[in-house]
Structure formats: structure tokens, C-alpha cells
Amino acid sequence: MYEGLLKQYKEYLPITDKTPQIALAEGNTPLIPLKNLSKELGITLYGKYEGLNPTGSFKDRGMVMAVAKAVEDGAKAIICASTGNTSAAAAAYATRAGIKAYVVIPDGKIAMGKLAQAIAYGADIISIPGNFDEALKAVRDIAETEAVALVNSVNPYRLEGQKTAAFEICEQLEKAPDVLAIPVGNAGNISAYWKGFKEWHEKKGTELPRMHGFEAEGAAAIVTGKVIEQPETVATAIRIGNPASWQLAEAARDESQGYIDSVTDEEILNAYRKVAAQEGVFVEPGSAASLAGVIQHVKNGRIKAGETVVTVFTGNGLKDPDTAINETDIKINKMSDLEDMRRHLREGVAAL
Ligand code: F0G
Image: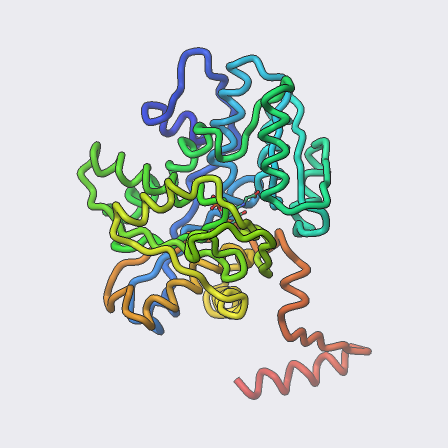
């Protein structure tokens, strides 16, 4: 039976005899062939659906490792700043480990599903008036003086856990893809994937992909080369103006001969609707940034015809019901009785 990442990739992770075996069967997520989009774009495209992790995002991979190490080091509480997904994962794994989670979120800029999770898992939820970058600064300061372990991706154990997604992709494809497309927020995940691909390359002889990272245009610090004081984007998950792993992300880009580019909110929403409507895969807006980027890079030639591309769908669409409802033309057919319904169906089916 598959139990989780700490067991599955034990020899690739910083695990000792004293590391508690915390698990929610995280990882082992599907690599879904996106057949309609592949045809449309003239490439072989797969989606690594991280939205099927136990708390609905890739954050579970890093959090299981970070929480296990925190417990090993004797921590009774963890803390993180978050645009939502990190807080959900921190809250769940803290509960699993029997310790307390403090989560600090930017006021009003967190998707409802993510807040619901932190509440359900029983975290101590702290809201601040500033944005994610300010929240991260606050928790970094707090963790210096208080008896809490910091579990943001500045904690190196987070990246160790997250690199396992690259291992899985190489195992699922039985090779490395030509291109790995990924959303960039705080820039931890692109750094973790690159580390994972390099380790698999060294140990298993797989090739190295080009890393194509995508920031939202209103939060594109790495692309513009300057800190964005007031980041704005519909993709609240990546509404980050001063990425903590900035340098690691640039190294991933440069070493892999890849790119970090930006996508507009319009491109994000277009990709967001497209992958649900054409492939049956519902992802959150932040996750759609990578597909938006793939579409952009096929157009401008940065991805070439016939290449094998994996786009990382970092979080589940159910996380953010408000965007799903507000950014889509909703057509709900109200019926008063069974006759009405029958007529509606007959018309519809006849037109097929
Ligand atoms: N996609 C989703 C759904 C995310 O939640 C995040 C980050 C990213 C992409 C970007 O990953 O930060 O490693 O570059 N969310 C963090 C959070 C910031 O607090 O949940 P990154």
C-alpha cells in the first residue's frame, strides 16, 4: 500500500531513525495526458495534477518533510505566512503530528476553500492588514525569538519534500520532459523541481528539462528584476512581490536554459477555463498560470513543435469557488417542473 513520501523516497530525503513517519498518503499524483490541448498546441502535453494531494495542493510534499523535521527537533508549534495553500497543509500536518499550527494570512486575499481548510484542521489563524511578503517578514522575525518552527519554503526541508514531484514525473514518463512549466510565486517550487530533476539525472541518468516558470504580470518581480511593493493578480496564490527563493529560481532558469516570463490575468483565466472545459481538469487560477505560459511559449517559439511538456497544476480548482463563479459565464437553467425539464433535454439532445 502506498503510504506517503517519507517512506517512498526515504533514501533521497534527510530522514534519520529519529524522524517521525508522518503521512497522509501525499504525493503519487497523476500525470494526466492532455490530449485535446496537445493536439491544439502541436506538442505532447501532460498535467501533473498536484491538486489531488490530501489538502489539494503541492504544499503537502514539502510540509510532511518540514513538520516531521520540526517534530524531530522537539518543536511543539509551527508557523507560516501563506496565500492559503501553505496554511492548509501546515494545519493538516500539524494536526497529524499532534502539534499546533499558527498561520498568518493576508487580510481578504485568500481563497475561501483554503480558509475553510485552516479552520477545519484547527489552526490558530492570524490575519494581517499587509500582503504575503509582509506576512512572511513578520513570521521570519517571530520565529527568531519564539518557540515555533518556521515552515515556509525558506525552511530547506520544504524544498526537499517538494523535489519528489520531479522524481515522480521522471518515473511516470520513464524519461524527463523537454520542458517543465510551472507557476512562480515565492519561487520555492521551481527551485525544488530543479533540484529533483538534477538528483534524478545524477542517480538514474535521466536528461534535464528546461525550466519555464511563470509569474503573474502584476506580481512579476523576477521578470522585471525589481521588488513589487503592491502585487496584484486574480491568482491570489502567487500574489507575491518579493519571492524568497528568487536567486534559486534564477539559477534553475539559467542552468536549465529555460525562462521565467509573465502571464496576464486574462491569459491565466483563459487557461483556467480551457483546461476545465476541454480536458475535465479543474485547477485553481494560480495553477493555470503554467498552462497560460505554455500557450504563450508555443506561440512565441520558446516551446517547439513536438516537444514533451509537463505543466504543473499546483492546486485544486475547488480551493477557489469564488473565481470559478465570478469569472465564468454562468448559465443555470431553472426549470419549474418535470415537463419543462423533459423539453429542455429533448431540445438539447436533438441538437447533438
Ligand atoms: N501555485 C499555487 C496553487 C500556490 O499556492 C503557490 C504558492 C504557487 C503556485 C507558487 O509556488 O511559491 O513555490 O513559487 N503558494 C504559497 C502559499 C505562497 O502560501 O500557499 P512557489
